[in-house]
Image (cartoon, rainbow, N blue to C red; front, top):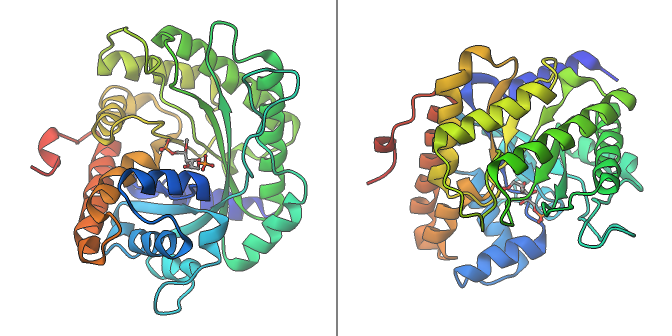
Length: 340
Ligand code: 5MM
């Protein structure tokens, strides 16, 4: 394992106030997003869409890395350039999602454990040969009065750490994504408690599997009340709960923290990231950035709708969202940064 190369890649992924573009939706998820806008759900349209994203002019000014899905990493742009080559030429570091989904966890009704460890060493070697320099694995945690269970937290934390160790062995920086889901009527305080419990378990397992913390990126949820909660919270309360939870659980050695957006509107995700920087930038031991999928892509899909004529406007929308989040990383975002 070349520790310095891992540290350098992790540092490059969070450098210059940039963030990551998560474009690793599995085929069913991508099709579900296309269906909302009446976009045909087939490989040609998924390829064209992903080409549109990665060929956005100027994207690397704000985006350091892009997380691809297995289908995409094997595809080419229309002119025959591989997606990886196109990304690298644009100055964006290519990465790959390597979990293979989350089947039900036996003995734990309503809970799931992410899969994909079998054969992972070989898959990582193949992806590294193709040019991927980082990987991503997501574990998700449902919040209810009695969930997540200890068994679910332990199983997913262990799998995340085994994945992270294998990624580093392959020379790829692991993005470690434990997501406490927004679905439900839980309070902000409950989300914070669960987030802290999950992060504690994840870092205990990462240590136990001898993962180099300087060579990982953590991709957590922001601490938010559930989507069905009637609780009214301010942006400052969210910033305080999120940073408070992370400061208590994430070692200072970790290279960076890059939030998922989890179903927040694009503007809210940006405003909240901005507030965290305005209030806490001076006391953060790690880089704090974004690794959004929906909060970057939703406006793009809304404009593109599968029509080539809309491609340039859709790319402008992606660039605009990336710019807003780049500003949020500096704590300089204001609502006038948004398009009128
Ligand atoms: C939580 O999802 C990740 C971040 O996306 P959001 O910013 O929209 O929350 C994302 O990378 C996710 O892992 C992919 O969309 C893949 O999802 P599936 O369920 O298709 O594996």
